[in-house]
Amino acid sequence: MAYNFIEGSVTAPKGFKAAGIHSGIRKNKTKRDLGLIFCETKCTAAAVYTTNLVQSSPIAITKQNLANGYAQAVIANSGNANTCNADGDIKAQMMCDLAAKALGIDAGDVIVASTGVIGQVMPIEPIAESVDELASILTTEECGASDCAEAIMTTDTVKKEAAVEAVIGGRTVRIGGISKGSGMIHPNMATMLCFVTTDAAISSQMIQKAVKIAADKTFNMISIDGDTSTNDMLSVMASGLAGNPEITSEGEDFDAFAEALTAVCRRLSRMMAKDGEGATKLLVCKVSGAKTEKDAIGVAKSVICSSLLKAAMFGADANWGRVLCAIGYSGCDVDVHKVDVSFASEEGRIDVCKNGAGIDFSEDEAKAVLIRDEIDIIVDLNDGEGKAEAYGCDLTYDYVKINGDYRT
Image (cartoon, rainbow, N blue to C red):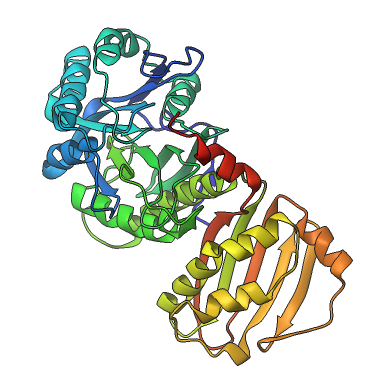
């Protein structure tokens, strides 16, 4: 492993400041709802977005702004998705203009994002009245990043932050990220916003390549409830202040950067899956022995998306037949007569299926394994070298309660 996790998130890399405040978009005055990330220098930048055909206005504006591969700031709000609104693009552009004026930069160098209820008019007044204050409290301290992480939360119950340090090109490079996501999460990409900063020197083209690699292995392997959102965005800004030789092509330095970026995204993905709406458990499906990586990915996603399996995990029921069922309808090239299944947690590991058939095991021991809050569903297809991991959570009564009155 060529990286180490460190404290902090988006302010850990050199050159970045962050802050978050309550502006008034949300009625709850104790909840921050407007976040800002700023770099002292213009950054190379890239992003990936939701594949939903219905996309938020902030995504449309951000795509325009990042077309040249550069950015210097992120402004993001919670409490309103600014999606499916006639004046949505105008409001998203206004957010960029307001942030740019407060920071003294070009509006085209601002990444804008929103999250919250779809189809409600975006109130721009709270942002206009608060952005100068927000810019004035920007800080390199961890508290600024933490406040920003809180400002993008919706039904999340915990903040999601992560950072790593790696030696690239003989220099110490840092990568930090914050994300939000709890419900309406399903590849591609999940209801999520994720903002990553790094002080690595890397070209826009290579950031885009690294972001795609990281997203495919992490955020695109999460499923909470099978719904793909309209506002998903993963963006990365690179200040270059670490002083490493600029990464402009594939090779050892690029591989090290992509690995470290993926590590940050994977940790954030696990946090999001564990914090799924109403969830009590993180589920990780670990598939090995597939004929191809594509088959491994397909099987892992199919298992983690199974509502029946998610319900069984909530009840700590070792119903391995639901794992086999999900593998069977995955559409992947699998010999079901070779499949082995086990469940594991900090309590231990228990084998429940061998060669596609049940084996004797203790239900009490299985219950003890499955009652824990992090469960591995281990699937060996015994048919090749392909492997993959997918992340999800159990399905509980509270998921329905949360989403039954989300808008009201």
